[in-house]
Image 1: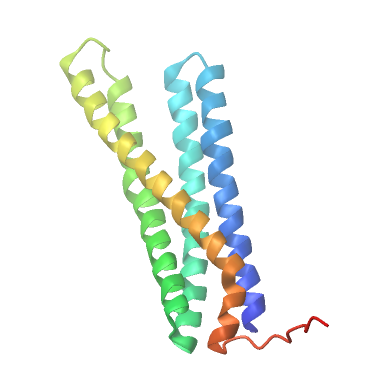
Image 2: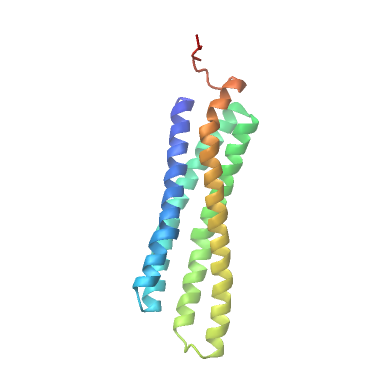
Length: 174
C-alpha cells in the first residue's frame, strides 16, 4: 500500500471520527435531553447512543493504531512516532470509554432511577454518576483535541518530503 493512500485513509478516519463526535456532542445529545421530558428515557437513549458510538470509536481507533504501527515500523521518524502515539492514545481512550466508562455510567443510571430521588442511595449514586460523567466529558474533550491535532498533522504531512519518505515531484515556479 502506498503511503499517500494510507495518509488519505488516516485523514478520512480521523476527520469522520471528529465530525461524528462533534455532531453527537453538540447537536444530538442536547436535542435528546431538551426534547424528551422523561429523564429516564433520555438517559437510556443517551447511553444506547454512547454505546453504539463507543463501538464505532473502537473500530476506527484500532484501524488508526494499525496504520500508525505500519508507518512507524517502516520509517521510524519523529512524525511517525507522533502518529503512533496519537493512534495509541486514541485507542486507549476508545477502549476506556466503551468498556469501562459507558457501562459504569449506565449501571449508575439504572441504580439512580431505581430508587426515590430524595433517598440517600440516590444522592450517593448521583454523586458517583456525576464523577464518571465528568470524567467521560473530559475524556471526550481530550479525544476531540487529539483528533483535531491529527487532522492538522495530516494536512502538514507534505512536510514528510523533507525526510525523504514520500517522493513527490515539486513544481518549479518560473
